[in-house]
Structure formats: C-alpha cells, structure tokens
Length: 446
Ligand SMILES: Cc1cc2nc3c(=O)[nH]c(=O)nc-3n(C[C@H](O)[C@H](O)[C@H](O)COP(=O)(O)OP(=O)(O)OC[C@H]3O[C@@H](n4cnc5c(N)ncnc54)[C@H](O)[C@@H]3O)c2cc1C
Image (cartoon, rainbow, N blue to C red; front, side, top):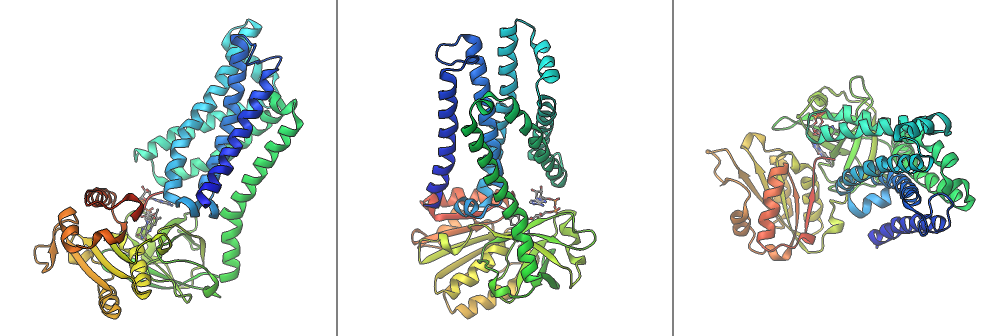
C-alpha cells in the first residue's frame, strides 16, 4: 500500500508537469509543438528536458533524503541503487536542456550556436549561475562514476555530493525568471514552489531535525567499548528514555561519534543485539580508516544517531519458520534477528559462514541463545578455510543449504554477508526454488 501510494504521488507529479508542458506548448508563440517548425519543436522539447531535470532532482532528493515513509517502502539500499540510475538520466536531461534551447534560439535568430550561448549568458537573468551549477553537477557526476569504480574514497565523493545542493540552488533563479512556463503561468509557478517546499521540508526534517531531536531527548552516549573476535569491536550506547527510541532488530543507524577524529564522518552500522530499550549495541569490523579507530572510542562520547533505518526486519517475514544466513560481519543484523525471532517462538535455523574459528564473532553469545531457545534456534557454523574445524567445512552453497535445511520451502530467508557470498547464496536459493519475495537481504553498501 505504501509502495503504491509513493508511486502514485511521484507519477502524479510527472503527469502534472508533462500535461502542463503539453498544454502550454500547444499554443506557445515560441516553441509551438503542434504547429511549430523544427525551431518550435527544439524549444518545446528543450523546455521539457529542463522541467523533467528539476523533477528528477527533487525525486533524487526524496530518494536519499532518509525520508521515513519513502525508506520504509523500499529500504535504503534499493533507494540508493535507484538514485544511481536516476542520476545518469538526470545528467542527460540537464545537458539536453541547454543544448536544445541554444540550438533552437540560434536557428531562430540565425546566429551560430556558440554566439547564442554567449548571448544567453550575457543577457539572460540567472543564466550565468545556472551554467556554473550545471558545470558543478557534471563534475560531481564524473566523481560518482570514479567512486563506483572505487577510484575515489567514499568521504571525498560524499563531500562532492554536498556541493550538489549548492549547484542545484544556483540553477533555481533562472527557472523562475527565464522559464516561460513559470513567467507566463502563475498557477504553475506556485505549484513548482510547493514542490520545492515539500521536498526541502522533508529533507531538512528527516536528515537534520529528526536526529537532533532524538539526541536532545535521549542524549546517546558510548557506555562501553568491548573487543570481540576477528577485528570486531562492540560499542554499547546508552541514554535517557531509551525505551521510547523505537528500533527493530535487523535495522541500522547512521552514527556520528562526537569526539576528536570521529565527528566529521557518519557511518552506517546495524544493531547487533536485540534492542531491549536499555541499551543499543553496534559491532564494527575493522575495514578502513574510520572503523580502524573504533577501539579508541572512550566511554562518555556523545553519539548523534540518524535512524533507525532499514526494512531488514521481522515485519517482512511471511512464514512461521526462517532461515538466517550470515557471512563474516554480516552476522550483526542476523544476530539481533535471531534473538528476536527465536524469542517470539519462530523456528529458526542460523547458518553462519566464516573463514575460520578465529573470525567467528559472538560465538558464545550465539551458543547461549541457541541453548536458551531450547530447539527453536539451530545454529550451524560453516568454515571455509579451517581444516581443524570439527563441523561443516566449505562454502554456504546450494548442496549444503538443501542438506542442512530440508524444509527450506516453508521458510523465509534472511541473508547478510560479503557481496560475493550474497550473490552465490541468492543464486543457490533461487536454484532451490525459493521465490525472490521470500529472500530478504541487507547489503553493507549504500
Ligand atoms: C546498512 C549498512 C549496515 C552496516 N552494518 C555494519 C555493521 O553492523 N558492522 C560493520 O562493521 N559494518 C557495517 N556496515 C559497513 C560499514 O558501514 C563500513 O564498513 C564502514 O562505513 C567503512 O568505513 P571505513 O572508513 O572504515 O572504511 P573505508 O575503507 O573508507 O570504506 C569501505 C567501504 O565502506 C563504504 N563506506 C565508507 N564510508 C561510508 C559511509 N560513511 N557511509 C556508507 N558507506 C560507507 C564504502 O562502500 C566504502 O567503499 C554497514 C553498512 C551498511 C550500508
């Protein structure tokens, strides 16, 4: 229902904008679609590209704005992937808009393309800042490609993305003072302002106000920093009235530790134990420059929390029985789900893949959980590179899943682990006939 409402809302804006554009351009003196010649059509299509580009920008902001009702429908990783795809379409529209309009006006005035472009910049109000904005967008897009190819560090790319807000701001003036769709049609102009206001309020509310309000109320603070197996450190977070901070097992939070050397970066981490209303726990594997410093955190460090986020929770589970599959540090959300689901009386099988017994995080905790659950939680550790391991050895593959979980067809499957493992396990599950709707997964990458 939420998904449908979200698409109806977004689709309605597309229909309104395209419908208005068509209506305005059926009788437009400069850019007439129906009776116009090539120049008229170039101008009309150029304007449509501009309108759609702005609509795409606002859509993009809603996708990554951590807007709760949007995120709850799809989960942040799917929204982020959609954001990447729309980003490229947006770039194309942003480039088409000035190219088509310059071409149309240059033909109409019978001057060269570049002479027309210079004339635009010199004489049209807001055009210079729009060109600057467009150049910044193009530069940030190149950076995004480099980050996807892993040539640029995440933090640099993120900083560049912040520049985009400024870049889009630069293009705003020329929309409302030069765009004939706005100057000639006050109702459309108000609609446009309302769209901007809606997106801005959502963005500010969910990205900034909500975390600050949560901090003001709960005063999150690091209470303990505990080393675990395999380069993992658990950070316990306490605070005031934590029972009122609603977080579900399997969800993640984007945290910013307010201490020297940490405060400029916010990173996502999953809840690694069942949120009992008394404390939160994140368990962090040392992977890069930020996570390497986690053991240095001191109790008493205030924590800004954005979230909880994510739909990797028991809410999406349709069966009474579940299979949880974790690989490496992917155990964090799985660990909290195992506790919740076994506690709620579900029949749970947990397959935990690791390289060797030294990287097995939460070993005793999981064994205790299984013992407490009295048969409702069956734990199977699988080691890929540990000849001395007395139990399952090898990879979590199709044969092993079929053998260990003969009643797979009656279970929902939750999966979190390294990308390659997830790919292999999803293929194995599909091969075993598990429908995609019953496979829930969390990717540790946004
Ligand atoms: C939904 C989700 C839940 C996660 N849960 C856990 C968890 O419970 N335990 C755990 O150890 N790790 C978890 N991670 C992974 C963790 O966020 C990254 O390992 C960490 O941010 C890497 O930071 P770094 O600077 O140390 O490493 P780097 O080497 O700088 O980054 C390694 C990779 O991590 C990603 N990354 C880096 N910084 C960020 C950031 N600020 N925001 C988003 N992604 C970033 C990028 O893909 C990057 O290529 C989770 C990630 C996501 C998306």
